[in-house]
Image (cartoon, rainbow, N blue to C red):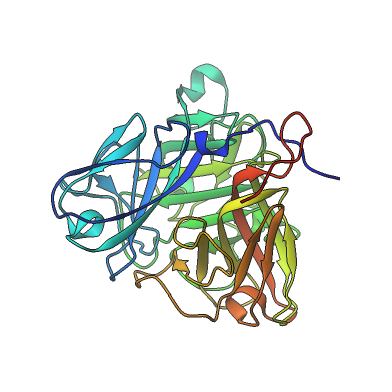
Length: 360
């Protein structure tokens, strides 16, 4: 059955931005037909090996953490210096705006600020604050860990059970402080396992990450784990629930064939990130701005600081209602291999009135 959506214009909640650096402060405007003030912006230099730079409204401008690294939060005065009503401003640092270098940014809209005093609200057992959009099914939450003394229960800000959770210790760095990823299609019991966004390893069975406890529509649980609940450390998390016609967080099995698996999303994706869960391979991203036409081969790799991959090994067709694999490569389509993905819409397959949209 064709998917209806509550979001006819996906650009109000997610956009991709590309630009060429100027080496001087630059106020960048998003390219969508509607204005969107982003609340989380993840920037990567395409032409070189600068690390990923992530900024959000909850932690504040100039404070970045990178997908590809376990380092702590850092301050860069010449990084992202302002969130605008329809974009953001970058300073002069090479990570975001080196002269003649090329860049891509992935931009999400969260929306309404919240603060949770757990003792007063009885929502969880740990105070948190953040920003959330029930319409877009996306939230940002920040909290302080308790460590071994307490399995924390933290308000995530969504109005539904999260399908994806990505958490990070922003106070301590090092190889052990990976981004922890919960994906509801990772395994049959995803609360017992996790993936590392800053690494290429397969799914790991680890009881302490989510304390073997599934998230609810109000809170998630973290055990005594460096990526979600180390005592007295600051943490940030990004949370999504599926919104029909706008976001899809699923899984598939590869067939190892150039006429590969078709993955239904219910919309034309603007952005897809794929991870092999049954083995070791990268987090690979395709989007509609760097390659607006099929076949999409050029990938960004969330777990690496590498420049944009511009070969022909990773073929993906972005279609009106999903994406189709055109590669035999194990990053996307190994025979019998299992994968998870995150996808956000460019346009719904069927709008809120039940009318098919015209895919580009």
